[in-house]
Amino acid sequence: DTELAQPDAATVERVSFEDLTSNPWAGLPVQMKLIATDAAGHKAETAPVDIVLPERVFYNPIARALIEERKKILENPDDDTVRNEVANVMAGIAHQPSSYRGDPVVLMALRSGAVRLVLEHGRDALEPTASTLWQSAVRIEDGTTGLAEQQLRAAQKELADALDRNASDQEIQALVSKLHQALAQYLQELSARQAGRPGPTQDLSQLLGSQVNMLTPKDFDQMLEQIQSLSATGSRDAARAELQKMQQMLENIQTGRPQFTEEQERAMQQLINLRALVQAQQKLLDKTYQNAQGSDKTPRGKLAGEQNDLLRQLQGMMGKTEGATANSLAQGEGAMKGASGDLQQGEAGNAVKQQEHALADLQQAMQDMAENLRQSLMMLPMPGMGHGMAGNDPFGRNGNLVDDQGVKVPDRMEVRKVREILDELQRRAGDMGRPKAERDYIERLLQNF
Image (cartoon, rainbow, N blue to C red; front, side, top):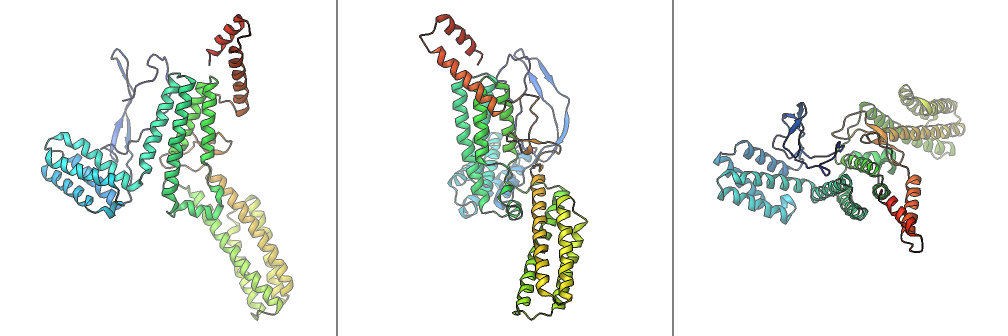
């Protein structure tokens, strides 16, 4: 249940993010509908929609075990045997602190939950115990990141509610500051959690470099500054739109494996193959150079054979590329053919020059391919999102954002200009040397902000 911040509003537009994974029906097909109730008790509801309620996947075995016990007790609320089993599992895990990193919060939660199940035989103990099991599992799985995420969601909701009810600029500023602190804590926790865990992000960093990271804490700081400036200049609708975009970005932060499209998977594999070909060509170039200097005695016919092998690998890639990448590969093919011919004729010195050209062309193709993949990943669909939501983020880059409902969001120069005008009006309003009629007029203008 959610109360409107403006209960007397004729129309309300609001994007809300609700975590339904803790619902007892998570993972099951359900019917969902929205119900609105006015102050007089009249109700209106939407048509039901059939969905499968999202279910969270836990990877930590102890967290999974707690979730399984949670399901059992919710499915069998009156079965004393099940209650005793769940209590024994909770107590058993509590006595193994190494299984949950010795977290004292988890220890106390599991112990108190087990005791409550044993001492309270009615259904009153079921809901709080199920909540204890869920929160303990999340804490074991996520560490303190889960708590930081809850605090971040709460801070976002407070700011959204304040914007809806046209709170004062001072309150908005305080809530933006609170959101900034919650965001910084969440990003810090998330970064620490992912730092030592290998996965696709690290693989992409090796392929694409550090530019694989689309958003940084500085970007979010700029968005918060923009929200505060828009609110202070009276553009509350635009401020709400910016907050919604930031909420969508935060929902899409990767905590697991990105959902690559088939095309992106193929592009990644092509880039991996091309990188391996570049490394092989570099080794052959070194060997050919040493042969030309007389320090390597490999028969030049054999070197030509090795060059032909690399040439065939390259030709196998060429039909799968286009644009600048294809042009670079074609130039590399020509240089490889020239190097092979020179080696067959015993001209290792000339072959070195051709191989240098081939290597440069392959490296250029790899850069072009990496840039294409990087741009594609800027529109990468995130877990839980559908396709077709690509657009430009507030910094002019491609990203997945929510619909802005047609709200015109002023750019930074427009906001700065309005803020300068507002500051000047406030300065003149406080200038007691000005005529009272002028100051009264300025005060009426400022009421619109």
